[in-house]
Image 1 (cartoon, rainbow over the protein chains, first blue to last red):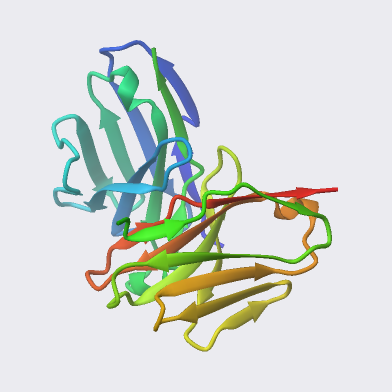
Image 2 (spheres, rainbow over the protein chains, first blue to last red; image 1 turned 180 degrees about the vertical axis):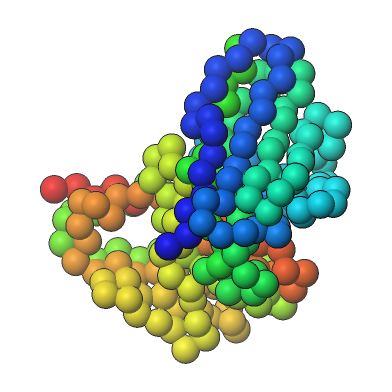
Length: 119
Length: 109
């Protein structure tokens, strides 16, 4: 099946620093990628939809200036958490849509996630 | 009321037993339904889609009840490796994926 990678898998940083997370589709081109955040024992929450070559669409309540998304190519989207604070500590997961039929969901492939801990 | 609700569990079940859990959704116009499995500190993996007529995949059976707005997952002959959190996902009428918080299942030897 299709493979999506994320890097880094785990990061620990000091409060106030910025952290960049990469999401790559390794064997297919993804015009759309999604960024999710998951707090312990909670559901995945969609943060933003990243479209190649255009600005990301952010969900309500997600600060676009704090969570910078860049989808520079059909295989790479990056999420930068700027001026991270302890409350930003979470599990960040990306997914890439391989086909057009999102409704099928079987065309959406998840990365392994990045665990961010802000001290 | 949450859009997608699941009993968080944990469900502690002996190996070999049958276990079932439900997921309720609030939007009657929801289009598609899925069960995902998530292991601790890992990404979710698609377990199965849920079709209107119900569907079965080996030991796993998924059912959809549109009238009562819930989907169910039944696991027969449970195995230790079935221990995970099972996430219910609903595609709503705006093509947005709404995730449940998951039901934790622990299979005990």
